[in-house]
Image 1 (cartoon, rainbow, N blue to C red):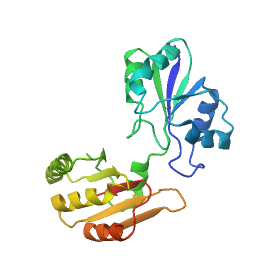
Image 2: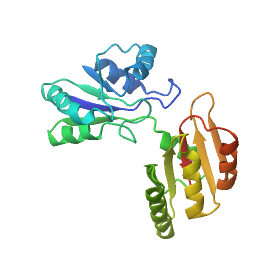
Image 3: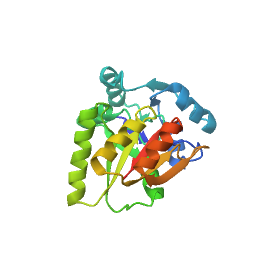
Length: 223
């Protein structure tokens, strides 16, 4: 029986990888990744020359059995995402679930996660936080979730961490403003990359800024 390693990779700066992660990627029989082109940049940087297998949101349900068989046959596999820690708003859950159910050892090779990186630079309380991930694309469902979060905050003072794409950023900010009011929020963009930016201001100011300047990159909202 092989081992499935969950390997965290950099969220932007390729230097943000652990020695153990590099050692693991060089030692396994197969690297399971979202995109071979993205992983190829990391592999070239650190001299990782291993076969790859593409696993993403579109094919995970039909490809998992192949990977489980390889693990059961004794191969060691490394699961990586395009950036950060696999499974955190990324593919891999079905694979890990089936591996656990099949008695396969699953081992974490920890490292960067964008949500935690943003939390630690936000200036907001870090003792209690909730990772929400991406909100629904549908206005009604998004507002319902936000109203539930507001109810949670009335009971437990916690920082919420939300991921958002540049295409839905303004709509999400408007929904947050409608539910929470014109509160101060923190918005992180392109963490560890050349154009890294962290904004700390009221939602109304954020909305105005992104209406005037087209959002680019992936965003993390903290409130």
